Length: 156
Image 1 (cartoon, one colour):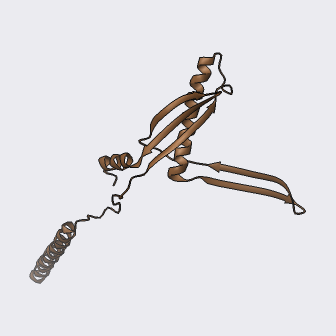
Image 2 (tube, rainbow, N blue to C red):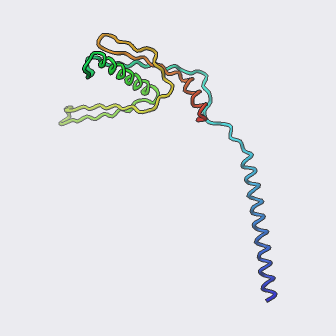
Image 3 (cartoon, rainbow, N blue to C red):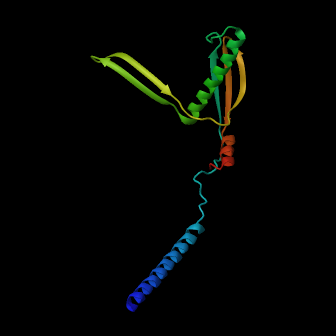
């Protein structure tokens, strides 16, 4: 009985010592890991910040509405959306999908579909004006402003 107690006490001491050694080695590893500072974010500030410009158009007479004023407002909005689409193409690129159908090596049908998708932050309207039966919107995107916005958010 006495030898059994001695074995149990010895095992308890051995286990405690082993656990404390494991804790000490873990804390050393943690202190070394926490001493490492990651300074490179992978995004360096460019030398030049280009300013992107886009122009959007919309026909006034093609808009649906009971009055000329309402059609003008809708054309203003449509031309702004068109300008944003063009700006998005410049920033993200454009996806083009093409299908061609041939029978006996004679082209019967040709389909071309394009798509653009993205989020544009920091663009501003430079000018918006009527031109004949169209409404025109000019947008500008200063990439330095976009860079600074991402810095403020902590995204860089």
